[in-house]
Image (cartoon, rainbow, N blue to C red; front, top):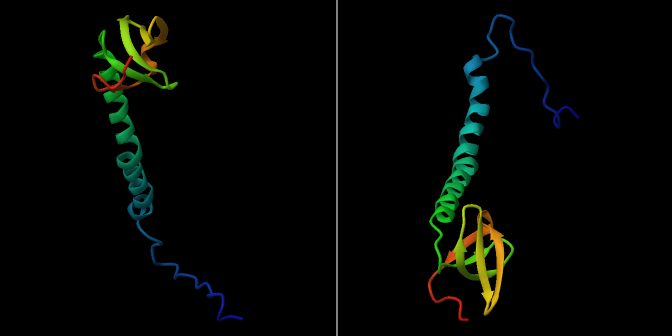
Length: 108
């Protein structure tokens, strides 16, 4: 059965087990990969969303994170007034605006 399991051979006592720098390379490499694949793109999306929310103005057509689509009739510091149908307006938080639609997308 020795051919299925490799025998462990002890290293000679005088040899170094490996430099400490090499043992830290894998965690450092993983951190760099996580930064460029996960953290950095998320930070970019958050920055773009903050910029889009700060530039909202009356007359913009938007979709909220809850799925409501409508035209902005009033823009405040924390809340916006959203007209979702003729004569029906709702007030939602500014941060809940998920995306800005091109003009003329919604037909009232």
